[in-house]
Image (cartoon, rainbow, N blue to C red; front, side, top):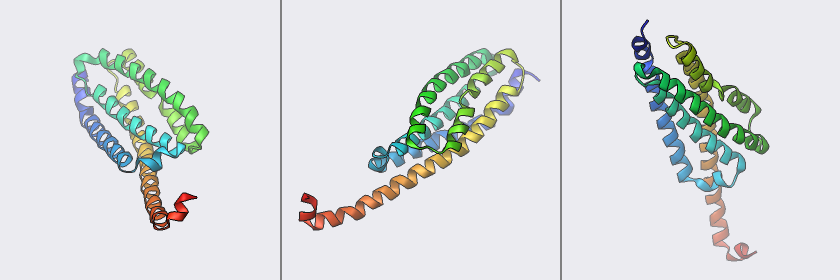
Length: 183
């Protein structure tokens, strides 16, 4: 199997990953923009917002790297290694913050497992240039990450909407009774 055939076979998957990740990242940004206060006022929700947005943007980055033409294969592997190192640095730092605010242990463990995968895929791409293994490894990782990030985002959006609804319900009570708002 030639490099070009291998890249072409994986193109639909990584195009879909890029589109889905970009769309979901955009929706997370919109959700955070519509109701920022419930998210910003809660450390757990801030951590979820960062994890969701950053995770989806990483999905876009992984997909774009994997969509590079076959003749640039070593560049793609080096980029995966660089992105893997960069994301690992950021995410390891964020993991300490997330654990301190009470993030689900299962989500943290899954994230810990997924963190080094782009780095490993890049190394595999350099060591086994004609292998399908880097594509498969990143495809499985991206699929699992999308599901985890989807649930993370869903929780974030529900919290922001419920928090905004709660704030709206509390607001008429305090504005209808000026004495209550002064105390």
